[in-house]
Amino acid sequence: MRPFVLLSALILTLGVAAPAMPATPSPEPASQLDHVLLWGRDIDQVSAIMAVKLGFQVRPGRAPGGVANRYVRLADRGYIELLGVTRPNPDMDPGMLADQASLKGGPGARSVGVRSSALDQVHALLKGKGLAVTPVFTASANDPDGGGPTKPPRWRLFAFERPPLSSTLFFIDYAPDKTDPASVADDRTARQHPNGARTLSAFWLLSSDADADRKQLERLGFTGALPVRIPQISARGYCIPVGPNGVLALEPDGQGIAADALREGGPQVLGVSIGVADVDAAKRRVERGYEQVLAGYKGVWGDAFLAPTRDDLGMFIEFHALPGTAGSKTCGEFKR
Image (cartoon, rainbow, N blue to C red; front, side, top):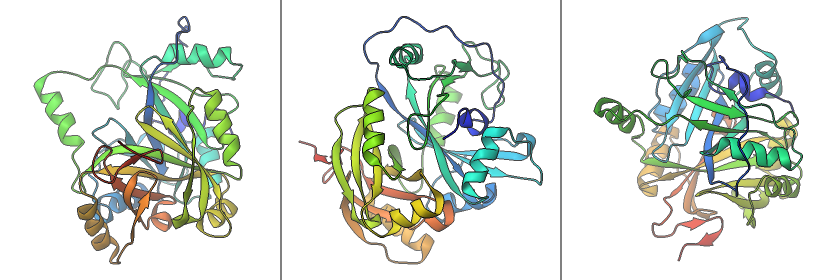
């Protein structure tokens, strides 16, 4: 576990302003999953896997200091940020170096973000609970990942001096989107995918003690955990609702994929769940990308299949039926 890992690899903007003053605490504000930081062996490799084998649209980013980023943006505002080293001896701060040391230069994910529209209230609430939160950092005025200088800053975030979960967690919020017709059209286009992907539904956090992560998430304000099992990877644990999404806090369930992953890589983001408009069509596309037949199953979110991405991406991507459609679930309970 390490502080500030996300401040290096998170969005690659790196320009921060003075810490923001917290607002007066209020009742628990709504939150939802925001994004996962996914390192590839290199930026073109991870982009090609996401686009060619899995059918996502990959959007360009930038490459300051020898570390590039690109984006897979989804209709529910969640996204996957792709990261890759582009040259020898890149400029890396301690957080990036720690991420790469954990991954041993390979692909994978160690950090996830939760978005809250009441960031200052969340910051104050968690600080009041005795959690060692960092100050709130803001994007620089000329943030190159944005559309030029903005007021308020394009993003604001905080992390933890001592991360409470087995994987690194941060909270983030963004300035309102631009509303001119061209920006709205560009944003809509960026979130359309050939595989029909619509939602970032779950982060899969793997550790040796799923209950410890469950308890910490409850301390963070995320309650209502339900026991789950994922036999496809020999894992068990809990599904914890986070707004309309969920976090799967998992541990190995005997020998198998989860046990192997934990032994080889330690605590990690083992996967993400993606809601798609048509599970069968997405499955056929991924089968063609990987040139193999894939098994469907009833997962935590309903009808689903698991893309065989662990060797390529260092984590799994599960595709499932969109919430509210036939055969869908939410955190283990069939929707009524």
